[in-house]
Image (tube, rainbow, N blue to C red; front, side, top):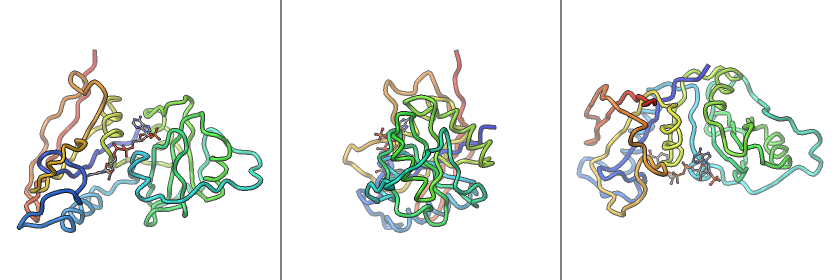
Length: 232
Ligand SMILES: NC(=O)c1ccc[n+]([C@@H]2O[C@H](COP(=O)([O-])OP(=O)(O)OC[C@H]3O[C@@H](n4cnc5c(N)ncnc54)[C@H](OP(=O)(O)O)[C@@H]3O)[C@@H](O)[C@H]2O)c1
């Protein structure tokens, strides 16, 4: 069964995604806004969180280290831990990510890949104690991957935590149930990437309706939307 997907993002008023580049406010700064995002993440009580390859690369800083003798490599998936309290999931189509441990702050790592990923990379993940799912196609089939996560790992609530490319792909595929945006009283001003990007845009594909708007600490605002996918 497909998990419920909640997209959780934090942005400046002009859609910037990097608190390190934002203006400060008398109400707070990077440290406070990062803490607010972390608190929102914890309050949602997801079974797992998922990010794109670029975002995961900020946390996974390993170098390639395929094992000398790989032996048989399991496809289409291998689960090193089916009873983890929480999962950290990365979409890494061609296997560019390398890890130094099987978890991120205690959350067991699962990597989702395209089917052109070489065996030596899967062998490296297996030797590192990391779980993986190989899509049936060269590009990752997001809906199929979510089904596997629900069926094999019992994931019921998945927090989609960016970046913009992954968010756009999930929106376009009609897989997001709710969009939660924390807006900080800050400006980026550098014309950087917005919260969601998708080639050709999302007009005609997606509709949002407001569930709640709440003021938070440090001058931030929390907006929650129900996501509707337009069909036909
Ligand atoms: N403010 C926030 O709330 C927040 C949250 C998360 C991240 N961020 C920031 O966002 C930035 C990264 O965002 P990003 O948009 O550049 O990258 P991203 O979404 O983190 O990763 C994009 C990459 O994921 C891979 N991918 C796999 N399947 C995909 C699919 N179906 N559609 C698109 N990509 C797919 C591709 O890797 P390949 O290129 O290898 O094929 C793609 O380049 C980071 O700097 C991070 O700090 C901010």
